[in-house]
Length: 513
Image (cartoon, rainbow, N blue to C red; front, side, top):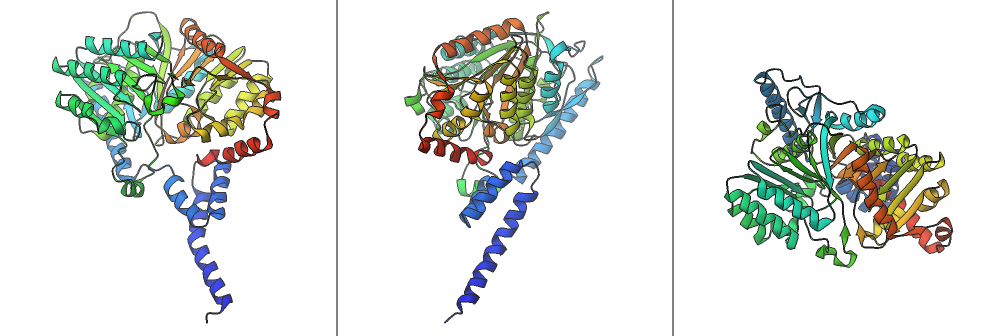
């Protein structure tokens, strides 16, 4: 009969043999906040072996060695392409930075000026530090000469996209996290087919998880047969094998449309009906999208190109650079596009949010469906209200993610005590990701104010300085507020003990969500 002490010693030895390397990895892994390390230590120690499996699958932001190698190839290629273009473009400005090639990408050279060879980066004056913060992510410079239209609603956004695709003369580039085969999804697909039939080069890219239904549909097949070039970002394939090559839940969450290097769209909307029938009980999904013209178009083009080249052997580098200028309609506002993702430093997106919050002097309004902030972001939002800035955050009253919804509400009491005005939108699922600052600066795009957008997803946003465009977005935010219920400190303190425990327990997992 085995000695109990010997058996215990063997079990303890095996436990240490398995757990110590994982715990050591958690402690020494770079780019981890102390809260994240503590959360993962808690999971690994509380759930022996199962916690280790969870960490292996979800604990590290890795897209796999093959993809990283491809990232480097794209970076080097775009660097060489820019250098060659500069040599054949007399008077072109020298490159002044690098671009973080995203979508499974790292860095690539980018033209220092995004318009004609005589175009110079603009200085946004009092808000130059905000543009430097966002520009440092990809090496882009802010440029004037931009114009934008805030589309009325989700259907109007699709109407405008279809109209621009029908006017396209050279190329159409689309990238969506979710593209459904519903009414709006079919309309965009048919517009691409019409464009391809008249000789326009059409490229469409979707996320492998978010658009899995589209990828396996007759619509996708029909577009390919019509001549539309198709690609899938971060394909899953066999989930078990895919998990061994890199973290499976890293997703391309971007929404980018570029047409003829002259028009681009940026916002929160996927290619779908507002009824969003895959999650119809939360409908309608309420989004905001802007249509841009000007130098910022080519920055979005570069983000698309880096995603496309990482996944497809279809060189589109010649669409970048000064010999392919973006539209310049004379006077216009300053804007800058930027993209983040797991192959870029994890703090890039929250740095922009925090910088905006500390810059506010009179008013800051933010809308986001998902709020699981970093500690610096929560502190910045509270500090904003404490120094007398009228600070408002609008969330959806009903969230399609019960986990994120619970985590978000765990932050309510601290925000309310600091003086932040919290509203919950009741007209559907408020999906708009927006921020307006002092009636002068606006941020719009795909990034939520949560750790998934900050660390795991590929995202794209546009930062702009313009009173008129900011006023339009601020008016839209006011529409959301008018359809929202106010959340008070008394209401939060009246929550049951069970609800508070649940929210706070889920929030503890925030660093690993």
